Amino acid sequence: MRPAPSETKSHHQGRNRELTTKTTEQNQADQSNAYYESPLRRPVKLALGFNPVLSAAEMAVTASQAEKLGYDSIWMHESLFQRDIVTCIASMAGATNTIRIGSGIINSFTRHPVAAASTFATLSELSGGRIVMGIGLGSFPTIPLIGHQIFPVEKTRPLRRVKEYVEVVKAVWKGEKVEYDGEFFSVHNLTLGFKVENTIPIYIASLSPMTQAYAADAADGAILSPALSTVKATERMVQNVAAGESRSGRSVERASYMMTSIDPDPSKAQQAVRGFYFFLYQLAEVVNAETLVPYGVTEEKLKPMKDAWKKGDIPEARKLVPEGAIEALAVVGSEEHAHDRVEEYRRAGVTLPILMPIGNVGYALSSMAPK
Picture: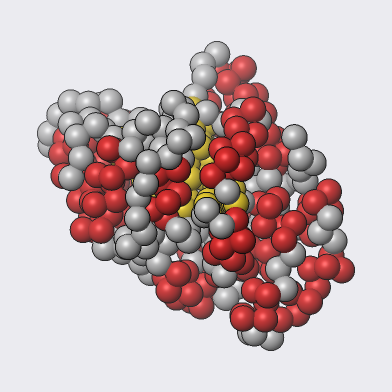
């Protein structure tokens, strides 16, 4: 196994609108990419994850293809400035029959838990019980833009907020009259007007060790990395979930997003990551340089790229990204190498890798297909 650095620092609140715009321009899933029959298919449990940059109709097509290729589930991030993921989830549900469909995630600020409970109960009804509710605190760069604080956590108490959210959702789904007085959410004399026929799994996403442990107490799964994480950092997050499992006496799914770029030409796969705006943002402003030293990437080597980023010279910043940083934080390269990299995360304890394909998306979907 390659040496793997430690976890990234917390997200900042910088370059918010520009980040959203540039990520959209990357158009994560290029529908023109051709699918092919991979000789390296392995019968394993895999999922796909997407940003809401495609139309609901395009996501329906992608979900149908994913179902035929044997993927366990398809997930979509929520964004304040992109397409509505509930609409996209409904579109995907109507185009498929067996694949699970999840929010990965909705935030705990813009959707009240009562409204979210009703929405996801309806989606579950529509899909025949294939919906997963993924919830989390919310997007660190964007939530402050609409007047909500993320930091300091001593004041905002994210674990308390997530706990209350889960408790309210579960209470609503029971179909009984809900009376709830929390620090963040209150519900009085409310009963859901229809019966929830199917069990709706809840997955909790967080980078906080305490919240990751809580996921094992109260949820059906934990979503670890939002896209970029080293194997070692992921292993520590798995250990946090395991601590919660030991406490609760139950086990949960350990899902983790993995930015994935695969191409018959590995250099093209690397270029796709190098050109992806979200990757540049994370590397320039979020990732702790010390965590990349085992990959031969020092602060000194990162400085030219960071300087170009600060000047707003994005083309130059892309050129100056160290190759080792790409290898450390993403699943990238040839088909065989990508399978090996995903297996490293499995050995670290991930039970549901959620591949977030960029670049040659059609090739990635086929080459990693479980069947």
